[in-house]
Image (cartoon, rainbow, N blue to C red):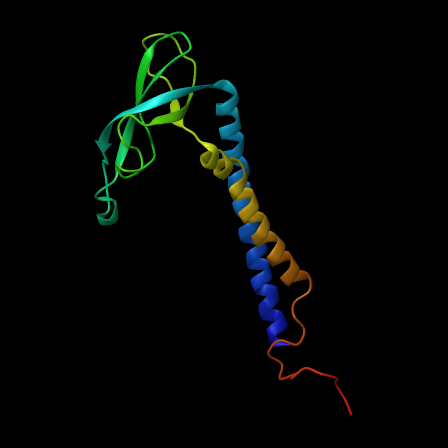
Amino acid sequence: MIARIVFRIVGLGGLAIGLFVIGIALKERARFVAVEKASERVIGIVVGYEALEYAFYEDRNKYHPVIQYETLEGEVRRFKAQVKASRSAYPRGKAVDVLAAPCPAGEDCEAELTDGMTAFMRKWFGLLLGGVFALVGGFLLWKPPSEFGDGHQGGPVGP
């Protein structure tokens, strides 16, 4: 009996965490899709690196790659990517996909790195992760294991 109560509490927690993660994922997905629709996809080149402003010990060999790209109007622009990576992950001269928001000449434009995995992670991974938590939590809440930890050894019950 106690096991059923514990499983229902765990199920409620899993359901709550799943719904919370789904809410955050939906917000990030909506933001990313809006940026994706308003931006143009261009090819950029890694031209340098900037050190992290604040870095933990494990991040001491990581940098922000500096990306240079050309807009559809022919302007050459640079931006510092928000990703933290080692120099070997983004070597100088590497071509990368960039989402660049159109903006007037001479202004700093919003741009960000994108590739297949980044797009998948930002659009779907949070929803999938939250869905798994919500599904498992909902299942434990709805139908907890009935004979877990109550001394039942399995097999037929009775004489």
